[in-house]
Length: 270
Ligand code: 2AM
Ligand code: CA
Image (cartoon, rainbow, N blue to C red; front, top):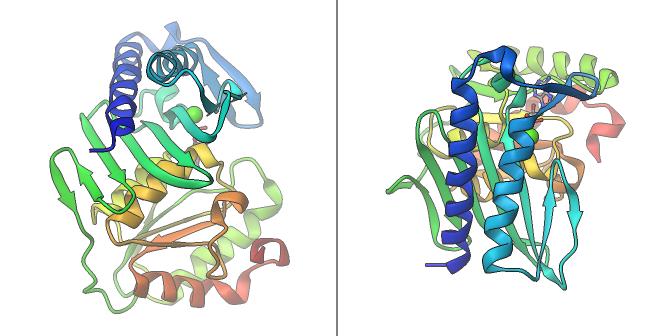
């Protein structure tokens, strides 16, 4: 087993415990701060991130860390980078809507080697190591490739809550997909869990505009190790830099890309 996976799991569970305790408190005991339009942070996000950093530092004091709340903490080893989102789904957490996760990815020389997404409410731990497959708790994940088209498919997505200019294109994508057979959509509020849910076959696919690396780097590896194809909106592989992500079986991704192609703006083709 990759030794870094153990540390990532320890960190994720520790952060998960902090989040679960915070969740039990009355909602008005959570201090909510607005970072930017529609984007919130709480003292729980910060405490969870600190706990994760402490666990990493104990075992790997020289590794670099990028945290959603702390920014870049450069270590003497810049080849290994931990990308952490202590609480993916803060909006849900603030409202006590029980769907959020801890997301931890480890990248070596720009390639994701380990991914952990932990849902502390359901005690579901999604893990992956590059080349060794993905798991939900102790069970191996492998998506089915039975689906031939989008008829009856259920896709998760995220509305562009921050960047208003992408709203018309996103609505056009929804319409185009429904016209091609998609039955329904889910907007769960946690991109990390959306990707883990594609990996576990709970949804048929996922797409979102402009994600940050900490939202999707861990879920991306978990999905790919379960046999999911992940791409940007035009079939390219640099989705971690643009944050424009499409995920599903090979067939589903192909059908999603075909469906949305006519309504993409120039910016979304990058
Ligand atoms: P966060 O909770 O870590 O900020 C994709 O929608 C991602 O955007 C989510 O995983 C979530 O990660 C982030 N996000 C921030 N503000 C949001 C909002 N108002 N609604 C939905 N997602 C939001
Ligand atoms: Ca977060």
